[in-house]
Length: 362
Image (cartoon, rainbow, N blue to C red; front, side, top):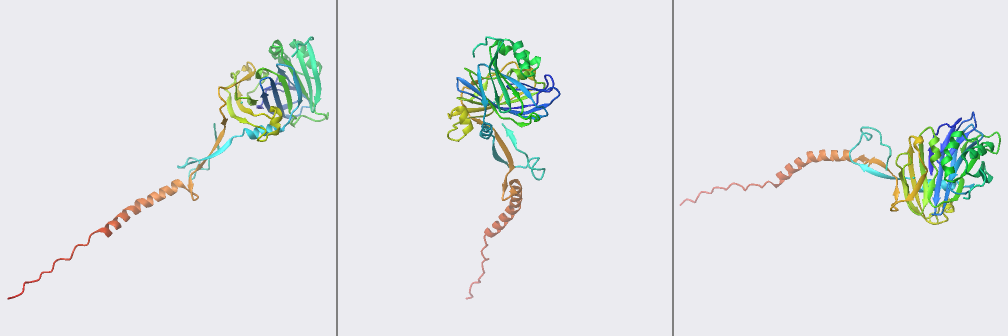
């Protein structure tokens, strides 16, 4: 999934991601240029591999992601996103038009391409399932039945998340979800967070394919969402959850063992998978009213975005329309002359007049 974000503030500069919410240090600034995620589901287990590209002057940042069941977390493979980008890229087709348009000679410049057309209950208020260091990430896996206690634990352990976010977590607490809290901190104390970070790979049991989106309602600016969904069939969101209708950018079945796509095979288990890329726009994030739940479509219809590159039809390097006009003009002039000459050549020659011969004298 690819999510391009320019999100707003919670307390200090903060950014709501499609998979959770992020905040940075007070008096610091960080922009999430891009969040790229792939969501895989085999009917029993769901995986989310996500990668952030950030820039700014913050030395630390944190975000939290709700998950429906206990999750394992490890570093992912960045090559997965390169493979998916290549796999789902649009194709370019050239098509020709006969008559010149506004941008063709002699009226203007050549036209540009046009695009035509996805656990156990905690016995205490906060149960620390696990905490580990993964590259630049301090990852805590938590379970809690009390949103206030969850927020207090996060703040006491270096995850400075705002009160608004604690309140937004209440629906997940009521559903007995668990949480993955991630704190970004470069190993060098003087370093700031910049560039593309190592991807994280989350894995948890799930009998439905769900992508957490509810916390993105805390964003102050519009959100753009793109999902790479890897499943047995073509997938679609059940509803728009407060955004504009989702659009399919790519749909097709892929066999990673034959292509090959090694990073994709590591996620899908080297089995054929249907890849669905879905794009969606949220002009008013505060209207987001739930998480994306995805379901199989009625048919596994393939789809690929096609970019048409229009070009003026030419013959021998010359515009076909110009040659046609010149040829037509020549034909208009030459045809009458040809007919006249032909008519003269076919005109019959009259016989010579008879010669009068007088009768002989007797």
